[in-house]
Amino acid sequence: MAKSKSVFFCQQCGYESAKWMGQCPACKEWNTFTEEPVLVTGNADKKRSRTGTVANPRAISEIEKDEAARINTGIGELDRVLGGGTVPGSLILVGGDPGIGKSTLLLQVCRNMSGAGYDVLYISGEESLTQIKLRAERIGDFDDRMKLLCETDLDAIEECIVKSHPSCIVIDSIQTMSDPNVSSSPGSVSQVRESTNTLLKIAKTMNITVFIVGHVTKEGTVAGPRVLEHMVDTVLYFEGDRHASYRVLRAVKNRFGSTNEIGVFEMSEQGLIEVDNASAYMLDGRPEGASGSVVVCSMEGTRPILLEIQALIVRTSFGMPRRQAAGADYNRVNLLMAVLERRTGLKLSDCDAYVNLTGGIRVNEPAIDLGMAMAIASGFKNRAIDPGTVVFGEVGLSGEVRSVSQAESRVKEAARMGFKTCIIPKSNASKLTGIQGIEIIGVSSLDEAISYTGN
Ligand code: TYD
Ligand code: MG
Image (tube, rainbow, N blue to C red; front, side, top):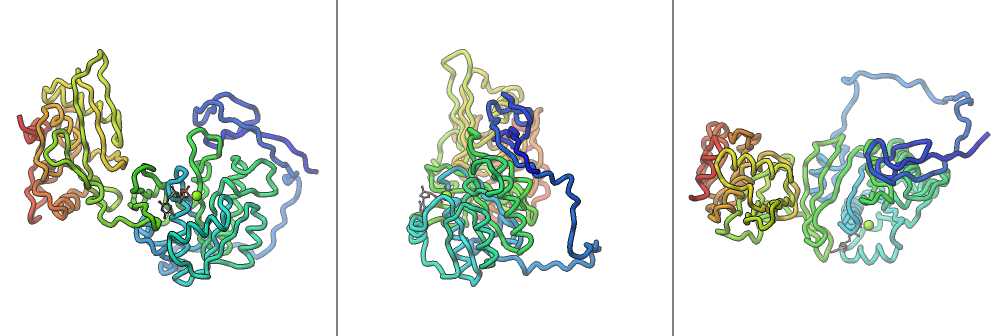
């Protein structure tokens, strides 16, 4: 006998509770619990009957792998982030702020895949067919193998998929989909979770690649894709400044490839364009000979990218110095300023500091420490560093410069981009010989490094 009851879900993280609570015990957010009805069908008393053959456990050596089964999306940057194309039967979640370009990217994926002879189904619950057509016209010509469907009912969607059996489907977006068996409204945690479950079953049983679009909202009014992260195979985040034209696609979870790979795109009039030379893009418009500006090299997955760090240091006019960090970690900036003050004697404690990673990219790698410290020192002394210099290295609390990984590819990227000098940790420098066209300066302490910022 079916009876209905309701439970409370945290709309932020999906924590489930029998009672309403003011603060979520899991994610510590306030006021995020909403009541959602759930249907309990006394399944527990029913004896489960199973049909089909008994599953056979197999040894790893018996299982054949089929690398060729990967399908390329036709967008090189996306393929690399995915680990070399999409794997049939996998679920890929694409998250990001509204208007960042998720629908555009997936429409381009559909265009390429249908052009390569695969059947593709694009299901939109957000836009009408005419709206999608208008967008598609900006992107280019589409093959007839790509079909559009405006539907939010999952039962209808499933029926359509079974009938047409495409190779790839796009769900735009999961927050608009609803499973008629779940009584809560679309976008709620239980609805999003159930819908994803249904899609997971479709993907695995029919061997279809499924792209799912998920919105992220800070307020938690719509269930964020965080709830689904453990259900899907791959989680991609699309980020970037909405006002600037570049976009960064980042893998935060990937069962079929490495994470931390990034793809760089530029939003143009004709949709998203891949940016192959990310360093040139990030350094575009750099002021040469300005104080407080340093070029660093950060590894994004397997790829080195040159970035500019800017630091503006001014005497504080109030008692409390102000510190701001954009793109870099705020606490790391504070720590480096303390180390600089203690170990090199720069009087930074009565200065305001504004540190900015240009290009809007976020970097947490410790390898940018040395560059950040040198930018702060250069900004403090108001002396410019030679613009042909690239800096990287980790800074320890006693002011020592520690080695970083993949120094060789970083130095090579700097040389490729026409830089003349590299200031790097001494322990890395001693192992690097035979790189032509660039002078390598090994430093072992912060004191030594900031002597290159002038006196
Ligand atoms: P969209 O893909 O709709 O974002 P999302 O699905 O993540 O919400 O992208 C919307 C933005 O992209 C919109 O502001 C317009 C811009 N855009 C272009 O600049 N050029 C284009 O060719 C297209 C299709 C969109
Ligand atoms: Mg969209």
